[in-house]
Length: 336
Image 1: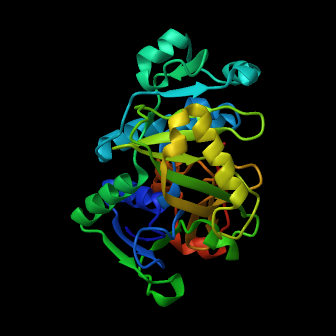
Image 2: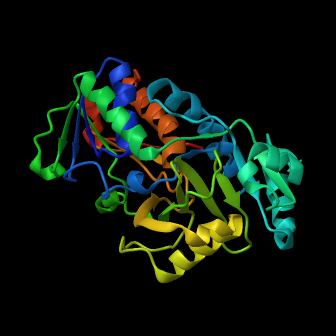
Image 3: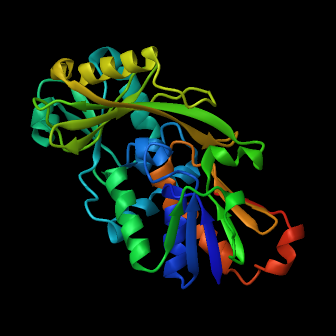
C-alpha cells in the first residue's frame, strides 16, 4: 500500500516508521524548509515518563505511554534509562505527598538516598520520589535518527511543500500537521509551551528532575556537557510568538530552586510553540474522507507518538479499511 504522511515532526515520523516496518511504501511531506524550529518536536523535553504523568494526565496516557521506552530504544541510539526524580522544597512537601498518592512505581528516598543517586543535588532536598523505570532522550537527536532510518529504507522526505502544492499519489494520507490541521479539526485548540536551554558547567545530574510547586511545576532535563533544558509552562494560547517575560522568570526561578549554581548559567536558547490539544487533552485518530488525522498529542509528543503510530498503522492495515468507501466515511478513535 502507498501512504503519504503529511508532517515530519515526531508524530509523522513515528507513523512513517510503523508503516514502513509493515511493508508499506511511504513518502513524507512537510511545509517547513527543514526539520527545526518550526515544529513542537524541536522544543520538546524528551521525557519518557509515563508514571510521572499520572499526576495530571488521564489513565490512557500512563498506560499507552509505557510503550514509548521500548519503541525508542529499539530504533534510535542514546535513550537514557536512568529513571527520573521528583523533588519539592520543604515548604511544598505537601505537593510531594500529593504527587506520590496520584502516581505509581516510585520509591520515596531521603536526602542521603538522593545524594547517592545525584551527588550534584546533595543537601538540596529532604525527600524525593524516584521513578526508576522511566527514561529520557534528546528529541533533536532522536528525530535525526528516525529521518536517517527512514531515508535508509527508501522513504522520500520532501520539505518546503504544503499539502495543496504536492501531488499526493498515496492510496491513503496520514495528516500529522499538529495545530496547523485546525483548518479541518475544528475542535483542536492550541496550548503554548515555553522552554529555555541553559549551560551550567557547575551543575551536574544525569536524569530529569521535576520540581513541584503549587502554581508551576517545572522539569529540568540534562542534555550533556553542562546543557539543561528547562520547561513546563502551559498557556492557553494559539499564537506561537516568543517566550514571555513571565515564562522566562518562572523557569529561571525554578532552575535556581533546584540548584543555586544556575544563577550563573548562560541562556543559550529560548523557545515557544503551540501544542495541539483536543478538549480532553487526549489524542485522536480521525478519518476525514481518505485522510487519517493523527493529532492532539498535547505535551506528550515523544511519549504517546509510538502508541498513536501503532494504532494508525493498525487502522490502515485493518481488513475493515476500504479505500473506496473512505470518501463518505468519517470515523474517530480516541486513545482512551
